[in-house]
Length: 123
Image (tube, rainbow, N blue to C red; front, top):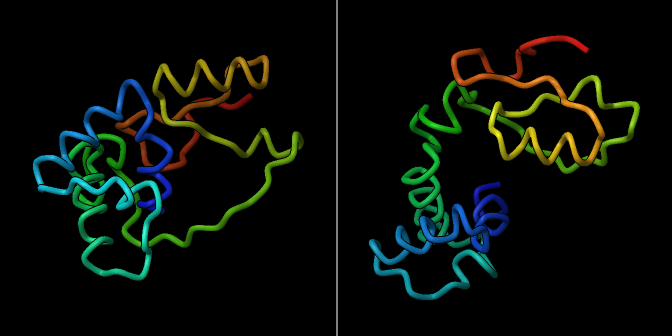
């Protein structure tokens, strides 16, 4: 999950520079750490987790990961239109804007002060 998260944000104008700065701070010049990750290499895994922790609060109960559960099972799933009522987003202007464009409505959000995945409002 950490490798996928970093790979998704490395070319972002908002988060890419933060990732690059964290890589530079750690002397990690090889972009393959994120662009073509070896998910079996324990040192690389630790570097990626450290980078995500520094700029997003991963594994520190801060920022985006405030209130995030300690133990999680990650699965890749396909969301169908009928699943919309079960989807909740972080209350971030970026996500709310993307969701509104994609679904033509504003989805329920979760604020940082609320427990993870507790709906802020119902549809």
